[in-house]
Length: 298
Image 1 (cartoon, rainbow, N blue to C red):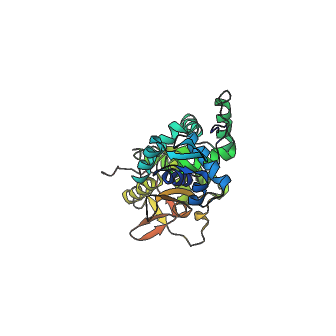
Image 2 (cartoon, rainbow, N blue to C red; image 1 turned 90 degrees about the vertical axis):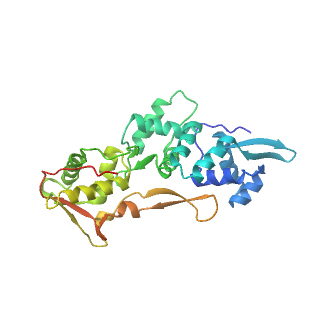
Image 3 (tube, rainbow, N blue to C red; image 1 turned 120 degrees about the horizontal axis):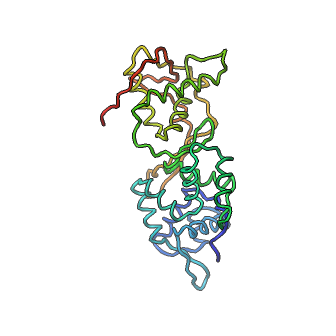
């Protein structure tokens, strides 16, 4: 049985983990794994083929046919998942999965890119490789990368970008003002907005500097507290358009019981504003551009 093919199979990250875990205590047949995962034989086979291709499982033959067990690579992958070491898990997939690795390499080469442009880049750079890419495949590996925290996707534009910045830059206040100006202009010359959506500002700035969303929240709150009277936070009604977005944020978390993981997709984090002293704010206004930013000590 060949485990190779040019495109990636539509397999979720949670399925890969569940399958690898299910084979950890010994060999399993496709039928047994279909029962464990509660999926059809065809779906189980598809997941097995992808897990085997990326070396999470190995295949043997017995008198009844093919059976599968977790490899040393699979064990390392499970160890990283159990420890919530998402960087390590992502690194293993980047080495073992040609499509996942190519996806991360492409984002390193072309920052802040939409799905169509990313697909074009991958098709050009892998024209003579045995692997091919399509929109579905990019969304699959993009899902893996988002859940593992290696990549974020602008919830308003859909642009992918690497999220590797470990600290907010010292010139954060200038970056904020520049992003604020750009977003303000999108309303039209005669419709300039004094108050701008914090969720949109968050997505724009995180994409520009590759920071985590929580780090943006900490920085914007610190900036407002350091520039009282110059920057103003404002609340919003529950149905405000500031909360609207085209895409959700994909997250990965350990299940409440047992060593397996569950995955969740939620718009709550990106839709939320920022919270200060128990009050939530969804809009930001700049009244005086002469602002400063001092990094808080960690």
